[in-house]
Structure formats: structure tokens, C-alpha cells
Length: 376
Image (cartoon, rainbow, N blue to C red; front, side, top):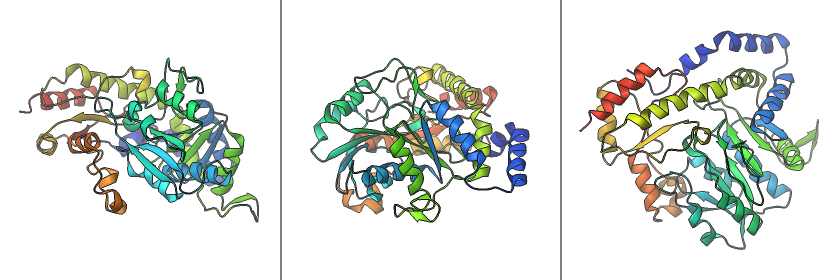
């Protein structure tokens, strides 16, 4: 069986460096809020291209703290609206509703799978305070039009960069955000990052971070994620415990050094898929330049998705679906269940993710391709 993603093999790839990093932390006797966190935060902010990076417990918390901090700073208040793509992993939307803000769902484009920037302006109201873009599947979702809308309507641009570590937005700029050759995570006002083990930059457990150029926002987020404390036993906010531990920070710092190399291998596999998948029953999203896509996931679309998935499994290829049920059809948002987002629903009914990772070989890739092309 060709695995969708072998976390064991990915860890083994840098095993010596990871074991040395973990040993260093264990022997240090300091396991939270120490030098490993400082080192990783500095290196990751430099990598992304922002002034500040604040580590936290996971990617969901990273997004929660961004919106919570904006509320604490008086930029937003409960009941305000945040525009967000209808086709995203539910964590993006949970972060908004967790803060008493109102998500305004916008359809994606079917050929890009990302938010349709032509449909954003029509839903902007006086209560709109932010646009939250999601770099879904590792594809850059930023467009010049989105940056212009943020400038014209004085909106915050928040990025969900959980799936796009190392991705760039090249040759794009607007009057508010000059983003030419910048990485995702540094394109707007703040970005949330997830280091879930399966991500392009994955920890050995949960982890997350916020990147921003806004010092006041960064300081507020750091306090909120540390019980609301700005100094020991002094609590400015009613916060929570949401900290990146030293072992995860050390492991992430090791893997960060290899991230561009690992992404380049993903791009090599993806380009082979694009050039050689010839089955008329299989559709591919539009092809972006490599710099704009780090292929956290390689999505294909098929009207008989479940049948294709079963066929691939029978022939030794493991696949996943991202995601079978869109947020507006989930029970936890039952008040949205009667809403209609046909493009989102079509994507969720047809999407199938092929194996792609730093440890997938080209021999395995060719085998996957041959099996797909033989599907009838």
C-alpha cells in the first residue's frame, strides 16, 4: 500500500537532528517558555518575513488569539463580521465564532478552490471588520483585489496559513500590501499557522504560531496565550494556557531548515501529476507557478469520487478526502444547514487528495499515475 502520508518516514528523514534536539531539551531541564521557543520564533519570523512570531498550542488557537486580541484592542467587538471562504476546514470558522464574531461565508472559484474575490465586495457591510483568507491545500489565496478591498474598506486581512508553510505570493501588490515575493503568513495584518504533524512544517504533536508586524497585537496575543499575563502573577486579560512547548519548538526548528527542500520535492511530484494525469474523468484545479503552491495536499476532482477512491484503495493507493462535509452542513452550525453554497458543495462532493509528501518517491508517483489513468 502506498500510504497517503507516512509521518514515521518523514520523522526518520531527519531523525539524527531531531533526536539531538529533543535530547538537548530534556537535558536542559527547561521545558516551557525557554530558549528553544525564542530561537524558533526568531527563525520562523525571519523565514516568513514578519517582525514577530508568537508560538502557541495549535493552529486553531493561533486564529482564536488573533481575533480575541483585536477585540481586546478595540478593533473589533462581538457581533462584527468576518468574511471567510465557505470551503475551508472548520477551524477557520470556529476561531471566528469562538470570539462572538459573525462569519460571512463566500463561495470559492471552482477552478482555483480558493475564495472568489469577485464575490467579496457584495457582502461587505458597515459591520465587516476583516477578511480571513485561507491558503487551502497549500495554494496562495491572496489576490491584488483582496488587498485593495481591505485598503478601501479599512478591513484587517487575516491569513489562515495552516496549510501553506513556505508558500509565496509573487508579483502581486496592492496599495495596502506590497507582497511581491513575500511568503504567505506575511501578506496581511496577522496570520495563524498550524504545526499539526501532517503539515508541511509539522511538529511531533500539536503546535501553532501567529506571525505579524504589529507589535501591540503580538504582545497582546502572547499575554492571552499565557493566562492573560503580561508578567508573572499579573493578569491583564482573562486568557488561557496555550503555549508551544520546548520540545516541539526544538523539533520545528530542525525541520524548518529543510522546509524549502521538502516543498521542492512536493512541487516535483505535483508537476508530474499535472503533466501526466490524462484521465478525462479526473479534473485538476488550475496550475499555479511553483512559488505560489507548496502542495500540502494535491486535490483532484471526480464526479464519482467515492468510486475512484475505492478503486485506488483496491490497487494499493491510500487517499483522503479534504473535506467530506462543508462547514455550513455541519451539525454544530445547524442554523446554516439550509444555506446553499453550490460551488462549495460540489467541491466537497468531488474532492479527493492524492499522496504527496517529502518521502513519496517518483517510482511510487508513477505507479499512482498509471493506476489513475487506467480508471474507467
